[in-house]
Length: 474
Image 1: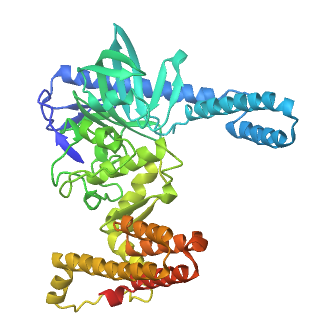
Image 2: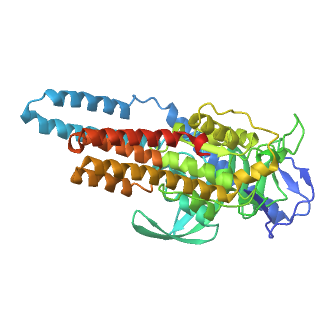
Image 3: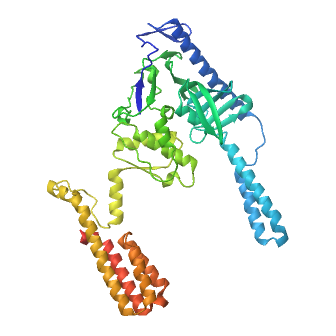
């Protein structure tokens, strides 16, 4: 959620005038503040230019194609086939070779992941850290690119431990964290949020102010010193609030930020904690409209998909929202976070699919003339209690039938096991209990005897049929 934050150390600009060097000066600001803008913009443009030049030179180097992880996997498959027909004395060396190839494949995957950045927007955050009188620069992005000899460290916000410093600490603050089991203390000398598009620096946000590129190539200090994500009902930018500019019309300094492309850079410490929670269980995020729930949810989805690609596959994810406008907005944001192919549905569409799937033949149209008294009756909390009581009563009836069948059969040991399993499954849905009875009857048919097995199958079939007849239950 975007919320303006004023920097009291910087006077708000009243108007701008162009200078011969292409930059804009702000009337009413001091020469020191103008120099401050020049220094900050120069530092960030030099950093971006250095990164772009280095990556392009490295990509243009004529090198032989190295073996990929897929090549190693193919060799592993060949060894596996060879292992099935090998002599007993040849098995140990083959297994040793397979372990070595597996290790090489894992290392190659790691190396390949450390060169995957989008050069058009290689990073969105920059930090300068000081530890034991030694300074180092760390860039935060959506990919990893490391070349320690050249002093380039671009780390992925989703898995690099050092990225925690960017989200947890502000410029000038001391930090103390555990990295790799080792305590690390230091100070954040510089912390800036950046917007880069098509390899061009568009916007800089830092404690000294917010600077945006103009159409003429210069930079201007904006009235709003910086922006950050924070709680507060109604203050988040909603998709329907994003301004749509006409061709050649609008504020040049803001034209590249309307889609909130670098919203990842604006996450605050509390939101980062929710996004990066462990992947087991549920994370419930409560708040009013506009408090940033959607931002946290989408980034958590991207975080889980990145850290466990097999378990959290995009084609097995589902995003449910309440209106089509939010569906369209999420469909644009998720690909920019590196997640594509996620199903996005409105609640109405999702609920209608569930109804038609589970209740065959049910009309899909809503009755627009439903009386208010009928709607209130169906939604009354007492209905839930009545439904629960009805299901308990139905289960008790089938339980009595099962007990009577067991008494007639006269097989004490097997019969008692049936009754115990029925009682132990009382917390499960009724149809699940029916399937459990059927499975036991077929598995222990010889022990139960023909009469009891047939009776149990008949009772289980009746339970399953009654469980599917929702209309009769109603």
